[in-house]
Image (tube, rainbow, N blue to C red):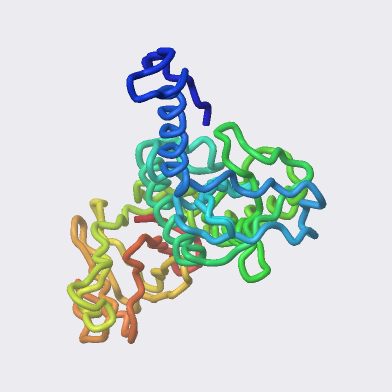
Length: 330
């Protein structure tokens, strides 16, 4: 802090109390210093200097505690001396939750309102993933010799290691981030992890339009569409499986035979429609998660636990030969 001389204090040679020259001025200056010191006492000094030796993967890094998860790829941390810093996870980029997303940055995601909405939901899922694994945890910041220590906004750029493993890499493996286009030591390994997640449509990559199917739920060679997903049943989902369901509609003008067609979620849980299942033109068929007696318009998966995630999932429909006809994230 810079202290400035207070020119409002008069400088008389002596007062009737016998104060020497500059007496009032000196007293005021002392008072300012004492008060200022008191104000600064609770303000921590700057954090420890960013390590300069061996910041690559082999480095032990810096021990910190995660005090806040800003979003999927940004956290606030506290050093041992109590000072804080903001860390941008190096090499990864999760969809935004507080700003607009550009689908073009996420290869294969439709450049449309639907694509942007899907990425926003994916960003929320990435934030929840980070919150669950990092909030309040003791982690180590590991720095890369090929990367700048701080980014454009002054945030630290680092790998975040929790329980000895890179959370940055885990974020990519789970499909909660893309690889950020920059230079860093782990680039090739990160590219492989992201490619695998995209291939399996994990996380944000469920937003990708695959096999020519329309992102909005349209089908290349079938008029079937998702009419509704009741993923959040009243009360505990596992205790009310009959109210968790997905409803399909035949948008075509002819009856649609869906015998042998399968319905699956992102985790791979799969249901197969029985032989003779036909959906009338304009008609619907509802698939309930729990057990019960089937009718011409209502079928039961017969599961003992909930299927559709409340924080986002993907409805995947394949025909009897295994071709993907429909992939609808929500």
